[in-house]
Length: 559
Image (cartoon, rainbow, N blue to C red; front, side, top):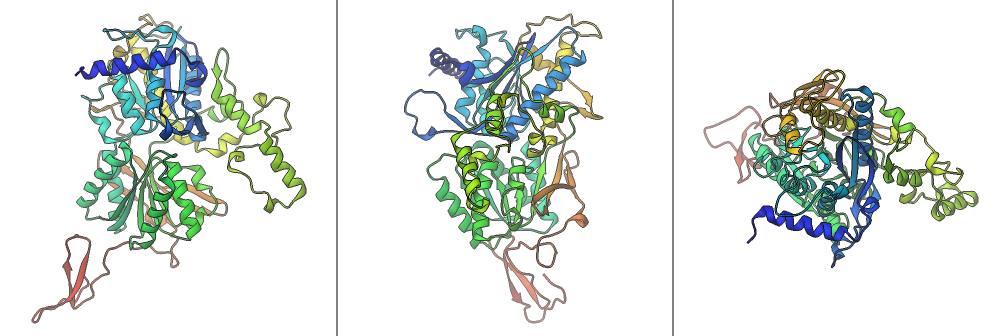
């Protein structure tokens, strides 16, 4: 049996051999800009790989479903790199980048990571590990399952990896994932906060639906433990396939919808990615089922969900979000979207084709509108990004508008800004920079940058940032309420979870409940026991029967 390190070298070698027959400049890494020091970015600019379950031989990954939120997060990194370069924060140093698509798949992400480390033939898979790859640090991945896979590979060469969204507690293990860092807290805190939120509103009988990936499995077990500590019980917990193209997805979503409908639990926690929540909500809306929904961080501020048709019929929605903030100049950057001098960006090209390009499908829709009422010409899902100026512009690649500034919650891209500045601060220390020059060696080994990242402690936007012993930011969460309005929902902060104090603080008075009497909904296994009766606890703590007081005893209070 080969040592585990050699297994990863073998895998990387095979991937490089496969890459020799493919043009990865287009199929793997869609954006790049040269620089003195290059930062890698792993981002799911597409939500799925087509026919992943039918692969029987090595072949290109066919990625589909352009992911607008991930695209904007990636653009936030590019904008921050441009800001750092223009600011002179690293005198004489220009940061570059290479951005690769993970397509939300771990195998595709490993391929992309190997490609990053082998750009310009800098990675030689031999007995010795590579010491100085061109890419010195990698920001990503988005999903925990993907980050876990990539972290195993990057840990070989101690290439620092900073995720802005992967929260699974498994990644706290610095023996297994020595080069992994993140600008968010671990799920150890999130599941504790979710359980305390439920206990605050006395919801002790809740349903849980999670994905079958590493994030869903670990978060589910962590939540069940934390819920037990505050006397909250799970009425049921269901699992959905993480892979969007799974043959059982539609059937399982229907089964989960039936379980939610039949259960007494009026509160349901969804530990799922946004695409699965959307499919589940479509069924709920069609069936006319209303519940109180609790969102995990992966979909708690999804604009797409907040504006989906019928979202106001589905019940109250609460969730937790990571730190958010402003990114000055980013809105203007999005309104004038261009790859920039010396840069290539296939993702921007694809977005502009989707937004402004002409196609037979959009022409067919326009012809329908010219001859029939709008109600008879439903807009296909593939055209939801289309501008009213599509098919009217001579060159879609030169077109721009403010669509992105409204379609995505830009404050959620703040973590990308912080991650990029974290690398810049570590580089400033490592390269011995002053106000006029950086005298340190530019072709530095990534492990030296990793050591410096672990020591950073800087202030940005009047906030202090540093990594703890597990490589996490102890930054806490905002508690979000999805407030109804005519055309959907908007997000309102109604409280926070303080990681250091392990306490949920909620401004309940500001919540407008969607129940008929506008009061806090109940979600209990058993009704209250009136005076003259006492609780007879069943095997589950939250469930009991009401028994008449025994002869010679009496209680004049409930429960």
